[in-house]
Image 1 (cartoon, rainbow, N blue to C red):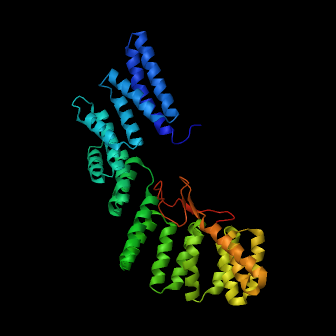
Image 2 (cartoon, rainbow, N blue to C red):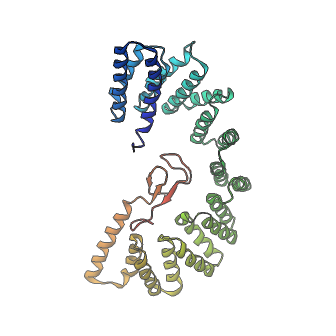
Image 3 (cartoon, rainbow, N blue to C red):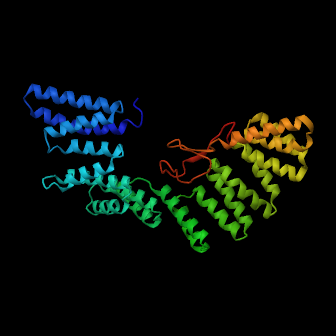
Amino acid sequence: MLPWYVIPAVAVAFAAGWWLARWLSARRSGAAVNELSSDYFRGLNYLLNEEQDKAIEVFLRLAEYNRDTVETHLALGNLFRRRGEVDRAIRLHQHLVSRPDLSEPMKTVALLELGEDYMRAGLLDRAEALFCDLVALDAHAPSALRHLISIYQHERDWHQAIEHARRLEAMTGEDQTPIMAQFYCELAERSRQHGAKVEAREYLDQAFACQRDCVRAWMLTGRIEADAGNHAKAVDAYEAAVAADVAFVPEILPPLLDSYARSAQMERAERFLRGLLERYHGVSPVLALTHLYAERDGKHAAVDFLTAQLRRRPSVRGLMALIDATMDSIQGEARDNFLILRDLTKKLLEGQAMYRCSRCGFGAKAHHWQCPSCKSWSTIRPIHGVANE
C-alpha cells in the first residue's frame, strides 16, 4: 500500500496520464508514441519515489509537445504548490484561466486550483472572492464551499462558517451538525469571555440543537453555571459532559470537583468517581479519589488506596503522586533517593505528549478542540499509557 503522502502525487500524475492516453491514441507515429509513453512513465516513477524535481522536468517536456494541453499544466501547478513554489503555481493557473479558448469545465477546475494556490500563499481575501464566485455560478460548489468553510474557520468568522456549512449540507446531504455545534461553541465561549452570558446560553442552545451529546457544549454550560455561582447545576452539566464522551474526563474533572466541593456534594463526588473507575481506565479518577480520601480519611488511607490502584493500572503520574504522599514519612538516605526518583519522574512527564489527534497523529501537551495540524474538530484525545493518562 502506498504511503498517504504519495497518493496525491499519483492522482496528479494520472490526470496528466489521462490526457496523454488521448493524445497517444490520436497519433499514428510509433516512434512518437514510444517516446511520450517512456516520458510519462519516467515522470510517474519519479513521483512515486518522491523525486519531484525530475518529475517536473518530465512533465514540462510533455507540455512542450502540445501547449494546449490543460491537464498537464494542472498537474504541473499541483507539483509546484506541493513543493512550496506557490508563485509559480499561481502564474501557471492564472495563465490557464485567462485563455479564451478554455472550456468552462476546465476553467472551473483551474479556478479551484488557483484558489488553493491563494490559500497556500495566505491570500485569503483573494481565495474567498474566487470561491464565492464559483458558488454563485454553481460550479464545483461543494468543493468551493468546503474551502470557504476552511477560510472562515481560519478567520474565526463563525457565523459565515455556520451559514456555509448549512449550504454544504443542503447541497450534498452530508451531515454538518457536529462541526456546526463546534462553531456555536466558539461563539458561546467568546460571549462568555465578554460577559454576555445570556447570549452565550443562546449559542449553546443552538449547539445542542445541532448535536445533543456535544461534550464541549455541556462543559461550557457547566462553566457558565459555575461562573454564576450555580454549582449544583454546574455539577449536573459536567456529569452530562462525561456521559456524552468519557474520553474528556481529564478536562472535565478539575472544574467538576471544584463544583462538588462548593455545592457540598462530596458524597456524590465519591459515588461518581467510584463509578468512573469501572468505565474509564485512565489515572485521573484515581488521583481525584486519592485527594478526596486524604482530605476526609487521612494520608494513610489515601496512600493505601493509591497503592492498590497502581498495582491494577501502573502510571507514572500515579507514582509521582505516591512519592509526594509518602515523602514526609521518609528520612535520611532513603529520602534523598526518593527525591532523585521524583525529579526523574517529573522530567519524564515533562517530555511526554499528553494528547494525540486520532485523525493525523499530532501530539500535544495541552488539549485543543480543533487539531492545530489537520484542523479536525474533537479529535484530540488523551493518550492512555504508563507515562500518560
